[in-house]
Length: 264
Ligand code: GLP
Image 1 (cartoon, rainbow, N blue to C red):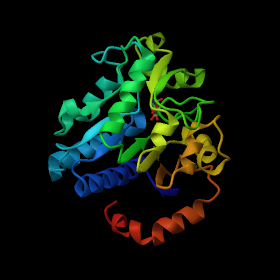
Image 2: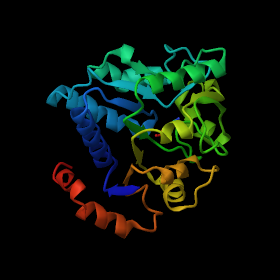
Image 3: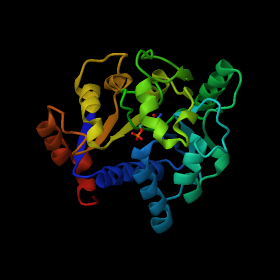
């Protein structure tokens, strides 16, 4: 795992966008794993700008989102499909037929989960998976006690997650209590993972996720088992990390990161 700490959330989003652009340029037919949440909004705005101003070409990409609320129509303004269309897909040149989220309206949960897993496998697997982190330590909607090898399934949400996300619903009680989510095992199958973490309210959980012991109580700790993870944090989110000095040194000195220094 590499941890890169940048002064602002804007710079964190900028670095993530450059890594995604490099991925797409190296492999135009990339399969991207996408995430939702407030943290991603800056990143998607950057990608939209890079498409508009620099011709970043998404036309051959396919995407799979981590999760979707159970019981919301895709057209519902609170659905993750609506979020993705608004913040990214409508602003870039991707074919909407190549963008996938679980179907929140599926009645047979097991069947829908198996269908989603199959589609990911048939696409050749996810090249680059983007992640945020919930205050409960979840990635996707893998709430505490999710098996570290879990696959896509329907999951009940914790009160912490309901408290975190319900203010985005109008009224807040409209927030579903269940969601489909890729499993932790599904996420770990991705070839490369970028987790973006910004804001002081994530400082505690980020420290536990990357420096604490691996535990199914904090699903993000499973990322410690993956061979290619980059965590990009802003200064506020990194406040509780113990190894900051070392992480800064690595980012300043590893040849891999040199080209990004002047682009930020
Ligand atoms: C939701 C999503 C997660 C996301 C989390 C963080 O719960 N299921 O994938 O990481 O929100 O959201 P935010 O970026 O708004 O803090």
